[in-house]
Image 1 (tube, rainbow, N blue to C red):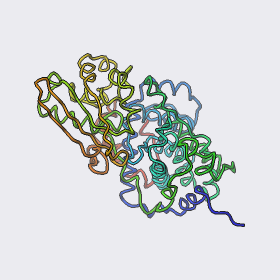
Image 2 (image 1 turned 30 degrees about the vertical axis):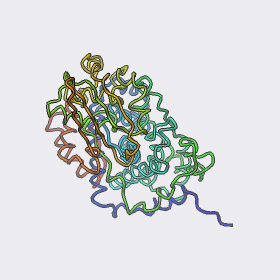
Image 3 (image 1 turned 90 degrees about the vertical axis):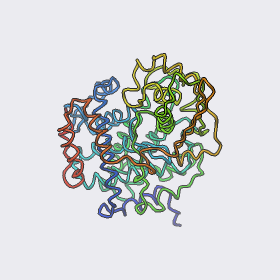
Image 4 (image 1 turned 180 degrees about the vertical axis):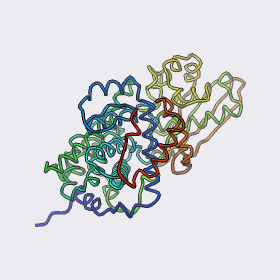
Length: 454
């Protein structure tokens, strides 16, 4: 008796049917921008202590590039280190429907696979598009549930996206892809306890997913068998990380290859948690209107219930973050930084800024009110009401995430962001311009990353 196809089997069938020649201009453009953005972030972080720790601990030699370094390492090590570096300052792309960070998993994993297995630009484009798309779609099967269960969706879904993306880039057949997904499910991980102390573990989640997905795809290529019920099974991915087997699994394969959610991926203008951005924009707008920090008595922010546990609570901790990394996931601190310094870039999150009494005094005045109509996670909005010491009230609203589907950052803005990030690695403007030209032809020939070494 013929059994009904599992979710993984249906998905794998759709994956093998996708033709790289049928990918639209929008998919290619977004893929180019992801490589551009992630490369700059790796360069910016190349001297950071968490990157140095990984370089010392993942020291296996191989043919693959660690961006910004002369070291050549194994594919798994390159995926791990580059994925961690790219996500280290939380300045990377986001899919608004998730939220999930696709670029920090897919770019490092695909580039490592290309160098290790001599894959060309066409394979890179296909793998990057497929993997990023699957991550976006997985994040919508049971919205918000993975985060609520205490796990990081980028880490959990990233390993699945990397396995699928590398799998199609390597030319795996349907059964091999099912096995790759099945194996990847047992490699998924990523708790969000970093929120309590500002520990480094969130930084490594994309890198871990990138290298795990790479290993899963290669294992399946050589015949390793994974469970075909990896998604919907009683002991599968969603029951393990979302505590339910009830989800809209039709989102995964239904119109895959015809509609590309990854085209809507948002690129960040600020170096902090994505859902802080609309509130930063509100604060910047009021600051530009003359509402200075010294005048403020109270700041009330309307917010979504779904982000409280990550960006608002416990409120005393968020008002006085223990370190610069924890400050990136504090709406009170980010709002205070915007009002006091007019900044929320890399320079806004330093030990000196976190200890600045002006910022801490203002952060203590920031509070929230839950808006039951807030559209999160389908849209990220901000609403701020400021009361000044003389009793005047000022309001600002940000109806969407800047950099996302409603208000994209232009290619020129992303290139400026890259240039600024690459300058932290000592790159000249001329070298950055050459790399930006290279990105436009990356998917047309061999993948050569020699220009990204130090």
